[in-house]
View 1 (spheres, each protein chain N blue to C red):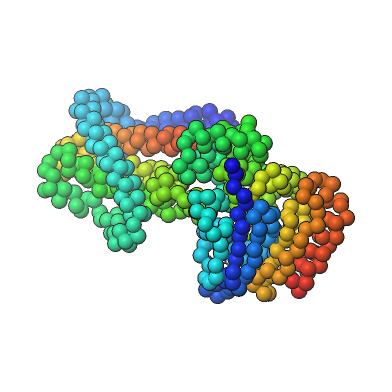
View 2 (view 1 turned 60 degrees about the vertical axis):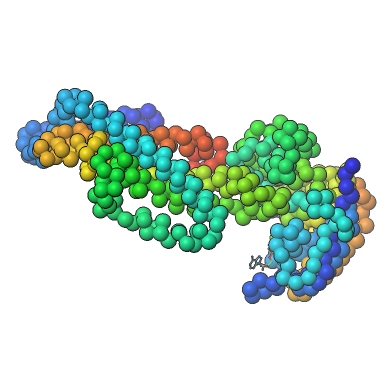
Length: 255
Length: 253
Ligand SMILES: Nc1ncnc2c1ncn2[C@@H]1O[C@H](COP(=O)(O)OP(=O)(O)OP(=O)(O)O)[C@@H](O)[C@H]1O
Ligand SMILES: [Mg+2]
């Protein structure tokens, strides 16, 4: 089968088929449109509520972006600090695992109390859920540098800084990129959860539309949030490809 | 001026791991500028010994001295070639060869100049902008060799460097290494479990034994200094390999 057929035509046919069946099922009232709106209604909402949705999407994109960048910067630097000092590592590592298990939905109200309604609470929510995967994967990467290469650096009396920059960080790059993929997905989830309570962005639209029984608008907002997540992850994929294609099997040129 | 090769002296060297001691009370001396093979069966402690000489592992007891007294550590230029190439996959060939000089604080210009010279010596100058992933096994090993030569070492330690290569490539690299050594004044210690490789390459052969956890024989190589393909059909080469072979069997039995 030609790649074009496999990658574009078949998924497209499947999409049209599913959407048509869905539309039909709702039109003939097998399922009530209060439970599942027909695709045309969602499209309609996307068009009619476009100004409100677009404004909300911009707000959410901003919050997700800030959470992601904070997670990237603070996640990688805390992993480096944990890695550099065994004392710090043993003292704090157990808690980084513990914090990963805290359900964000449960602490979101607290964030609103601490940061008030609005973007800061949303950013905090996105950051808290997305930072730990970056810490964990960076640390795993740093710890898995090849022992023979470590010997090589020792032989030439490399300083700690040289080893970090020329050996440990490049070795952990594939791990960091994996961490960032997870981070990107979670930053969107965290931000939307924060917005449910924070009263801004796409999450807030979902919350309000649900209360008004505007299921079509809920779906339109959910669709936009998913596309945002998809866009973020695809961007990370692209960066990962550019950084790793020449040397790491995960991004090998000719598969 | 390039420094003379470093001497290596071990006194009562012992290395113990939890349950076994692959090296027990080992003593030997390698003279400056010598080419010595460490020949022995798998697991007899050859790699362990080489890493201790490089200062990468500490002996349990005993002492290793590299270079005569009074040589500063900055003048001890030791290089190590591993069994696999162990290149940095994210750096191109040139970047891999400049690495040791960068770590030792050389300028970029100087490092690249010397790296290109080293690549020329191993015949890979046209491949400087390749990534390791795009090289064959033999080419990677040559890059690894260039990386070890770039610092102009006065002690070169090689741990079965060509063991993973095909026979033809290996003979070629053996020849190149011997020629490199003849041109230079460095001391070379070469770990191998190949009898013919030890006989072809070196001036002296230390045979290690598992049973006594140390060096059982020190054998002088009677072959002339310069070696070539003809060396392998020299009758002295035949005698030496036979002698080594019977000693090997004796140690193994
Ligand atoms: N870090 C370690 N901890 C425990 N045992 C070790 C360690 N390193 C090596 N050994 C043991 O010491 C013995 C000698 O190991 P070494 O790698 O020096 O052998 P070798 O002569 O290089 O063998 P080969 O030819 O297979 O490379 C082996 O039995 C090995 O299992
Ligand atoms: Mg070994």
